Image (cartoon, rainbow, N blue to C red; front, top):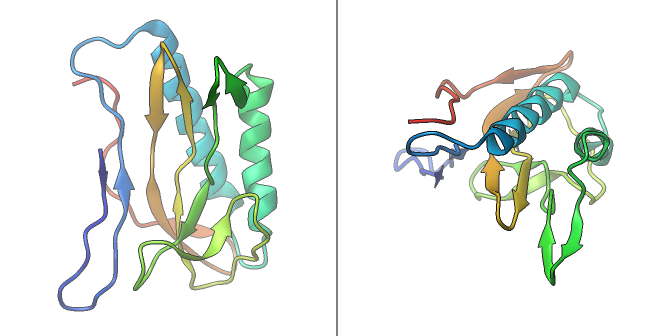
Length: 151
């Protein structure tokens, strides 16, 4: 589920993604979900004023690669972690700064998403997205929606 409501009063966007499975998820999908959740937590830990968004993205990509969840073309389709870790959020749904392969420096006061994901044919896809505000010493997760895989 990916929702991105916009305030009628202020014009600012929100952004939220949760992956859920009706019933029981496979053990492999549970493993992917847990790893993506670790990627989200890592992203939150790395956000702070002056941080290079590319470095945060590369660190999450490395975590996925180290755990055997590689990104690339398989069976003619891109699979793995093939989108950015996050983006700025404001009066546009996608704004600078970028937390991706593009150069970008995070500054205190930026509101950004943290949304790594993994996608594989025959297994499924998992994305978990939060919104955080960057501070001088870290970040604050603004999202209060619970995270769980099975419903």
